[in-house]
Amino acid sequence: MKKVYLDYAATAPTDPQVLDAMQPYFFEKFGNASSLHAYGQEAKKAIEDSRQVMAEFIGASADEIVFTSGGTESDNYALLGSAYALEKKGNHIITTAIEHHAISEPAKFLEKRGFKVTYLKVDKDGLVSPRDLKEAITDKTILVSVMHANNEIGTIQPVAELGRIAREKGICFHTDAVQTVGHIPVNVDELNVDLLSLSAHKFYGPKGVGALYVRKGVRLETFMRGGDQEKGRRASTHNTTGIVGLAKAVQLSRKSMDEEMRFQSALRDRLIREIPAKIPEVRLNGHPVLRLPNNVNFSIKYIEGESILLNLDLAGIACSTGSACTSSSLEPSHVLLAIGLDHGTAHGSLRITLGRWTKESDIDYLLEKLPPIVQKLRAMSPLYEKD
Ligand code: PLP
Image (tube, rainbow, N blue to C red; front, side, top):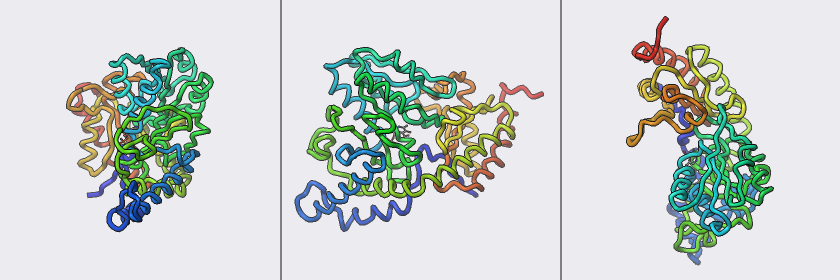
């Protein structure tokens, strides 16, 4: 059976060139970067070279990069580290209603411990309003965290403008750039950010490694305590293989980003045109223009996203839905509710995300398989009125 992977926002395969770059660091060059002997120094050099590559890619300097275990750790570090470093200054944090759980869960945790959190609303396309941010800031605000692009609906936020507003008030600004680094240009100065999270597995690097950019002078309470790795900012033996893989993924993205953006956005736009032409009563979720080149998200009315997903899976196609009924909840995605969808429409969402190995023929295949699946499921749906 043909197999088509269209869930790149969840994770991407590791590029074989990344794997080749990592390989020597498992056996021949396995040293602990904290050791003083030649093995250790060899690993240390690989890490520092990788730090330089990572920093240059986002317009930072090497000593502003802290390697972490991925997006979740970077987000937790940014939020908890800022909150505890700045609690004497104030106890108010501003974020949005559409952040990834790696931000919203630590935010909730901080609320239980006496911090106040404002969750900015978004408009129907998923955009945060700079005016809302201005109005939410108080003299107790210590941190603003707004994601660069949303992982479900692909909307890209006006981070440069939001960052400028925070900076004018002397407030630290964090962005979760897990879905953008490696996919669209990201520069910490142009975006006016002080903290930025990224994760290797979203751009063809290995899973379990990422980084937090920390602008010089920004105060963060250490989150992982133990050894003095990362200049005391993140204890634990360095994940040399992962860090080398992250840097190789950066080098590959730097080379191919323009071409991939062009190709993927053409395929994305084809899906955005052809899905509504082939399937009645669908709604595009996310901003029509300010969106990731690889993201398509539709609500397909009267049916459940999960049923579509399972039927696509039987046809060999892997996508995702915002209606996943996790074991603990039947709630549809908080992102889809935040852009104003009712529960029914939110439950019928389908996210299609493209990547380095997506071919035109994969899109042909999806466009061939999806309409009859929707037709079949709608025919069984008590909600669907046939004329
Ligand atoms: N933030 C966003 C926007 C994401 O999409 C993800 C992953 O899905 C994360 C954070 C978490 O990243 P990681 O899987 O590296 O922990």
